[in-house]
Amino acid sequence: MTIAEPETDKTAAQDASNSKRFAEIGKLTANSFNAQKQLIKRVLKGQNVSCTGCHQPLRVLLPEQLKPGQKPGIFCKKGCTDIELDMEAYG
Image (cartoon, rainbow, N blue to C red; front, side, top):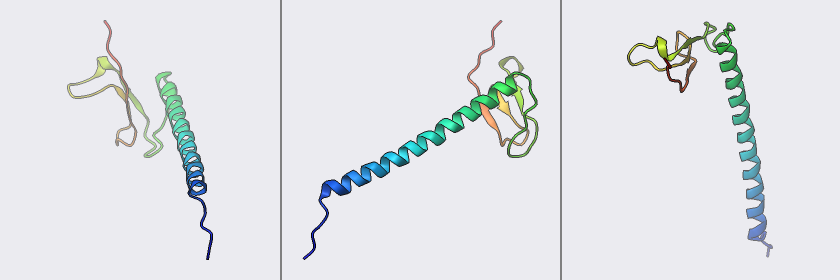
């Protein structure tokens, strides 16, 4: 005869494991967001920034530069980097 673990111990262990996973995901998401925010700042300041995928220079399309069907954002020629920005033209 074996004594089974109480159900509450299993649930508590699963909750702790899930909490740890969510914390890790939250940390990765925050790091990714901050890295992308810094990249956007550098590009908008006029600094030369290369795509991490194809190493081509990133370019900015502002609302006043758009052709029909285009959206404002930061892009590379190959499309590896495609950051759509919510912008409007004023004037």
